[in-house]
Length: 317
Image 1: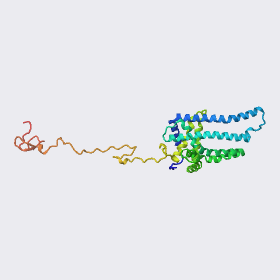
Image 2: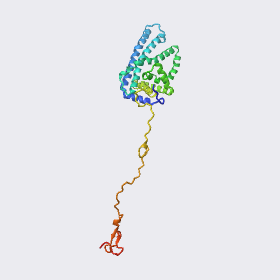
Image 3: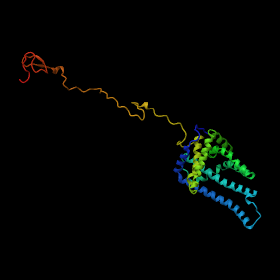
Image 4: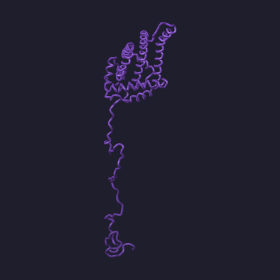
């Protein structure tokens, strides 16, 4: 099991779980719908005969004073609940498997719903002992039943990783419990709060006449899978959302001229060109600066109008 340096709970798992759901929502909606239809059919198949016996006893006037408090009815109820939980955990294993397949970037299919058979025995190894404890406590005292809810809430934080440890980690029941506790010890309270929020969000679809569960229930499986990915580690997982240190910022000093991001670059000073063109202005050259007087032959400056030697005008003649 690869341990990552994740900072505990990341609430971004909820938004990322929703994004994953929207990418393949048609498959998720179909799987959740079929799961609830199967659960409803199992409930009817298990409890209808029981209620039928009780109704027949009531209509015929049989001497059954407290049918619901009878130990036999309790035993039948427990066996019926075991059948229901077996079917539910089988389907849950398929849904967790689908969540991890999608985290690897694979395309999930409706048939993945029924792929939880290989995890069923290990999942029931967690559920059945708890169910027996609560069944016995409810027979002894209803007060004891509610007292046992306190340790159940304490174990809620490690429960976030329990089924993923079995499905994705391939662990047995005892090893999965130990590993889940080890991971949850990093921030027990926050993992517990996150799992409570995740369960409430997954069940919030009940408010929309129950049909909203088709869109909210997948968050439970995807959210747990994301928590497992970042806090435990899984091979082949997509890197989006995984906790990793941010990359270092680019070194802008490698560019010339250096410019700090977000600041306008100061205009550069104009530089004189390496080659200057010749000056064709009025600056006289030594060859063109001298002039000879046509009268006396004296050498004169260009700017003069009269000869310095003979005084006669140089122009106009």
